[in-house]
Length: 109
Length: 113
Image (cartoon, rainbow over all chains, first blue to last red):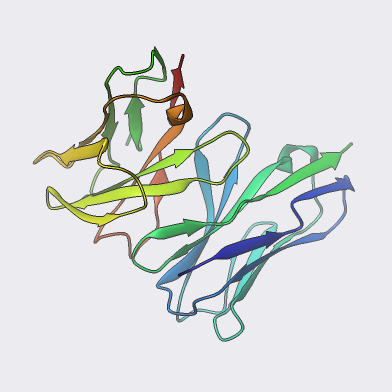
C-alpha cells in the first residue's frame, strides 16, 4: 500500500530565504509525482509534474526532484516571498493519486 | 478554457439527506477523479471515472456513488449523509486515466448538520 509522507508538517521562514520541502513514498512503482499548492479553503493548483522517467522539473523559482529508487522527492523554492505562503502537497500517481498530508509554509515579510 | 469547474460552491445538508455534486472537466480531458478533503487533512481518493465507467475506487462506502456522462462531466452522489461527510470535495480531470497532469477544480464545501 502506497504511503506518502511530507516533512516538515509546518515551516515558517523569513522572506528571501531558500527552502526545501521533502516528500517520501513507500512504493517506487509510480507513473508520476506532482507537487500542488493549496491556499486555505481553496482547490489545488498544480506546480510541477515529474514523470517517473524524469529526475527533475523546474518552473521559475521552483525546482522539484525525483529519486524513485529511494522513494524521495524534494521541492526547492528559491528566494521565498510572502505570496508563497500556502500548503504544499506532494502527490504520487500509481493508478490513483495518493496525497501526502502537506507542508504548511508561512513566509514572513 | 474555463478549466475544471464544480458546482455548487457551498452546500448545507442535514444528516440522512442525499447530495449530488457536479464537475465539468477541463477541455480535452476524459478522466474525472473525486477526492474528499477533511479539515486539516490531505485529500483522500474516492473514485475515478473513465469512459463512463468507475475504474478505481478508494476506501469509501457504497453510500458514495458516481456517474460520468458522454461529455465527460461527472456527478458524485452521497446518500444517507453523516456528520463525518462534512468536507471539501474536489474534482480533478486529466486525460488517459490520470497518467498525465491532474487539474483540480475549486471544490464544493459540504456541511452536514
